[in-house]
Image 1 (cartoon, rainbow, N blue to C red):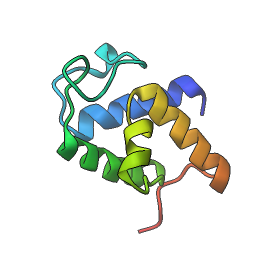
Image 2 (cartoon, rainbow, N blue to C red):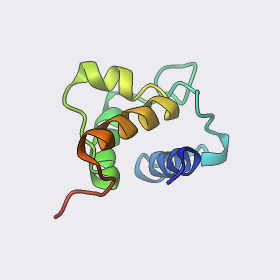
Image 3 (tube, one colour):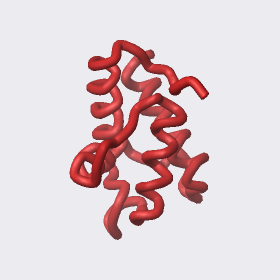
Image 4 (spheres, rainbow, N blue to C red):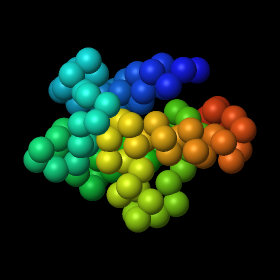
Length: 96
């Protein structure tokens, strides 16, 4: 999967799982996801995002310090997923 394809999949996950009213086409890769200057996500959205990442990509976020950095933008989510895949060697949801 190319970087752009992964970023598109991340945007689709955000819109679908967080029920955003913003279309994925309007989410810039470097748009802050949290706070008034971005999408305006909150702490509940962060928890839903972590669960969605685990289900969609098989990548977990171990704590709030990591989440604060990894979940800042689509680009940082992309980089975090790629980093975690590099450690495990796979991009697949965990077995259920």
